[in-house]
Image: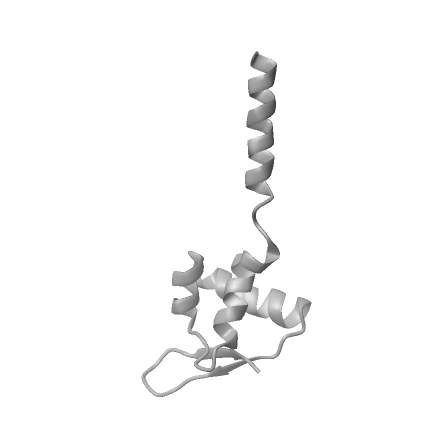
Length: 87
């Protein structure tokens, strides 16, 4: 009986772990924010992902620019935080 219960619990854990896809990753969320016509600020990305600002900056520079080769633009408007977009 215990073996059957353990087998069911193990199977449930595997199913839970396998539900996450690359399409619903935090990096995918950030890319979606940056692809919007209005772009996104560091603060907006932090709110959407739960990351700290230095993690967002590192992801933009390290993963998106260097690893993925995406062209990220930054526009600083008077009195506002910089807005980042994928060009």
